[in-house]
Image (cartoon, rainbow, N blue to C red; front, side, top):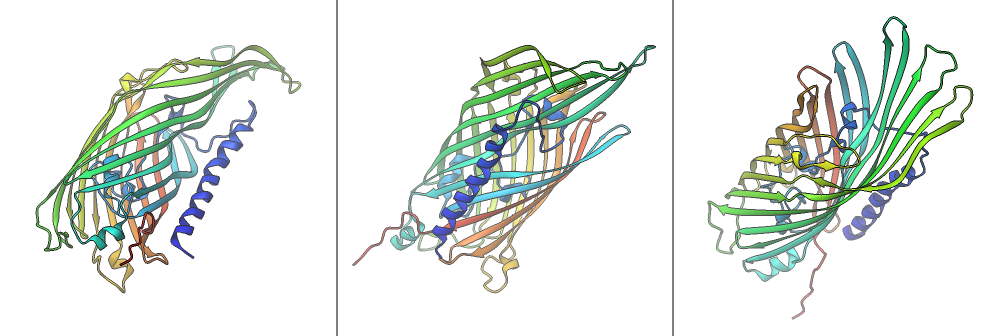
Length: 455
């Protein structure tokens, strides 16, 4: 069984898994809102922002702007696609436990989802490069990826007793959905400079409902307001990396284990147009039957908006095959965000992260754990949303490991694991303490674009 066949089979299976939730959501009626999680803050903005880092980067705090790896794809900087040495399919899933607290109120929630699907490859085969036995000054890599960008999921009930009349009013808030990004990127390297560009298609849908019932009055009607909003947009991302070697290559022009280098990385995403199509249904529901009177209905209302620009830079120190230490800073101008379908102010957000990766002995032949990649990271991020005048923050640490496996073609692939623990919310309000586990695999194949030569 060839690794190329395995990659194609896994790719088809992953696409089917990604497609199934969308077909299921398309069949839901207006009365069925089934959130996959319970994150009250996801009712604001586009929802909870999700990281686009792959599992190998998540274990390092989510760093990647200044990372280059021939065996792993890096979508945090499209310039790094030029470092690919093999074709790689990467798929990952995650599971999350959240403990919610707001004063004396406490709750817990479990959730899980497919986190990303990526296929990337070099246009110059690594085997052909090795057979040429000469140093190359130019490399080119490209790829595709699909990952969730934001997630909406909440189910909140509030019971209010008013004044002397002791009227009891119950309000139920529910939301589900989110957005995805489908991206295509290219990265080229000329000597020590790499440049990259990516085009991303953003799409998705969110459903938010608000129902109010007057419980203290017998046979009172309840009201239900439901908003369905579909989003689409096109985003461009640019990246650059500069590689500075501290040691010289050997006589064959190859850098060996332990050779030191410094990588500087920069990314920029200009703001982009956001288009929404919304529908709103306002109903009055009878307590005696399932019938409902439509008070108002708006359908297929198209509106505009703006997605924020983003600037990030990072630096990585690497001892080849032994150690990586990376740090980065990202600023997203969410004050540029506009959404006519759901107008609300957001604040600029910043993210700082640090990560390291250590390999005990990359040349070990009989001990897989000596060749494994052990990872650690910390991060602190501001969220664009606010609650009671306080901007939300998300901070935590991560641990990870990349376990090497060898496929039939003797190409090194990996099983990647990462564990995140953190706290999300505000200082005085609702807080979420969470633990999130990520599992992914990287299937690599060196046979793509191989050119046979005969003497």
